[in-house]
Image 1 (cartoon, rainbow, N blue to C red):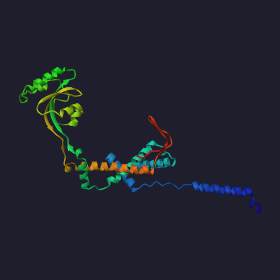
Image 2: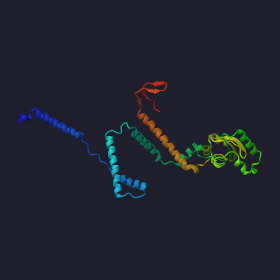
Image 3: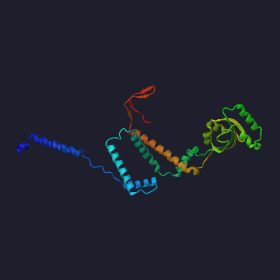
Image 4: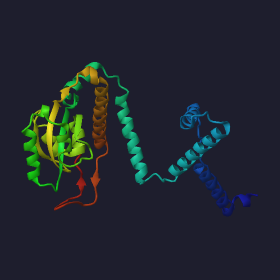
Length: 290
């Protein structure tokens, strides 16, 4: 028995067995439990109700639950395998979620009326009722001689508009697919229909006289400006809800910008490769923070 205990081979085998057991114990990991909370259960019910309009059945609930559990298992295994590393889509999604989290800090803060009134005063040029314009026009296609346009204008000006037969201005010129009379149009609407050059020239005309020709994307127009109401500022009480939305958006933007400044200090950037910037080549080194 003593000779056996003194045998180098026996001790070699025992030491190998101990090392094998220690290595196995070190690499063994406990099962990673997936917790399904009451909130998860309620979310499944609510989402199905919102999508289908009906309560979820027992069989459908089990199927949806198993689908979520399977997704979580796949997600954890993907992280275990490092599949999230250097993945552009994952990186962008996580950056987006972090941005939302930083902005939520502002969304949850109660805003008093004083802050809103100050923001309104600082940005009063944004809150106004757009100018309104009413006008008639006679359209001439681009291939019409300009002489014909001026002859028509002279004829219109030679008559008192109050006694001007409706048929004269309605039948003069060429047919126009958008119509000949426009009521209470904003400059944005007119720009969308006729173009910016026409809208700008129209806003400069005098009232109640035929003028032109004005150019548009379609051709030439003789115009009678019937009504022009300049843009007027809207009082705070009428736009308070919109001011609050705009104020929160501005604060979210500011909050995220400040958060990025902190991250720039926490994570400075060093470029190992040479940066090509057009004619100049920057040497490797630390990039200045924005």
